[in-house]
Image 1 (cartoon, rainbow, N blue to C red):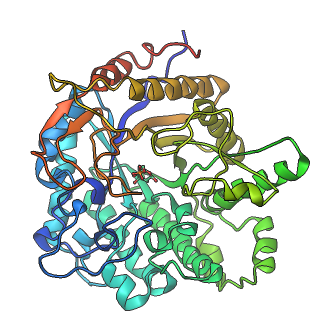
Image 2: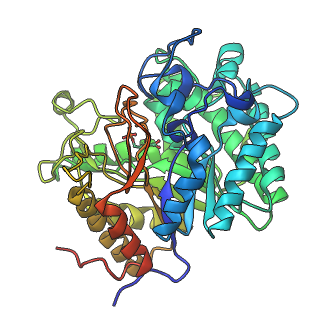
Image 3: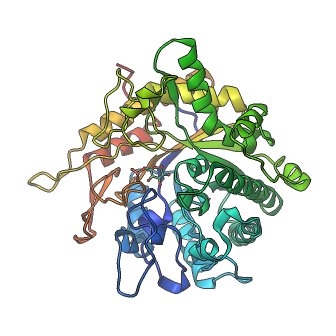
Length: 466
Ligand code: BGP
């Protein structure tokens, strides 16, 4: 029987700004997420006294984490991916000294996880940065931000070196190309050259964080995090195949720099043809050589690419301008469901980088309608996850080295893309709606028991592919 490795890490993934709430508590500063009330693609709305947004409370994880971790433990989690809100540690981003109350919060969180034998996997920056750094310095457009980030990274490595041995630098680092404010703190109107320069600064900062982690916590592993935006050619016409290759390279570029330590050759042509002249110092090139220990990624969907520009006009305005695949079904939010794409992606990344992989996000955002008895029969979610996990198992059989799997949003949380509560991913239901009404009570869904069995049997309870 095919199974998962004995030390495989099973769990879920959340991000500070989508679960914690307490957005100004105990000295926390405003982050880019706090000024984007409509989500990562929405406009910046400056905060004024008395205003409020859905993320200000989110699911109140800041106060309810013991209860939530207990539920994760009940499902058998061996791993929980969380992020540290940079603004709890350095509220404006440029302080010399960290905020002790913020550091103490994550101490409590990691201690709670340890008490339940759950290994933390910690993202340094998940779709947010101090708003102060954006306003005063121009975000990642400024080279100074590298130093601020390095100070933050060194501070948390030193503080949590006994408690956290698995780290990630920037969440979905390739998303800066599509959501520059969220990714690099630049306005949406920024030119390609400005965005790539900011990305360059962030890539250098990522490498410096990897170096600092290796120095401060020698027995830790630190990875990058990519949005696995798999694109297939819409037809087998050679020009479509080439188009799909360049569409995939757009995001693989980030992995190439972070895992191989240098800019790939082909990007130089892209820069030349787009009048992009990056300022890369000799020191930058040397710093980039510090590469990640493993590759992590999110995977929700795949899409197609075509040489014919007209085909893109019919595509839904999804994040990466993917053309719909006529052979696949879509979620309620138009994300195309493709379990075999996950096996394909795992093999591609394994072949390309020859480093261990970690699936740190995967899941189905769906509307859950509680039944009369208040139960949530989310068979659609079970079906989605089951189909993907079967393909994960196939990829492991193919020879892929995979450290673990953390499904996205094991507890309902605020959506990053649309700031909705109603786009639910959880095994645990949270009583809160898009307007912020609800008791915040937690309830186990049908999928809760299903996932508990999957973890308990180390994947043996999964059916075979259909
Ligand atoms: C990824 C992000 C997550 C998460 C997820 C689902 O892009 O890393 O933060 O939210 O996608 O997206 P959404 O919340 O828009 O449904």
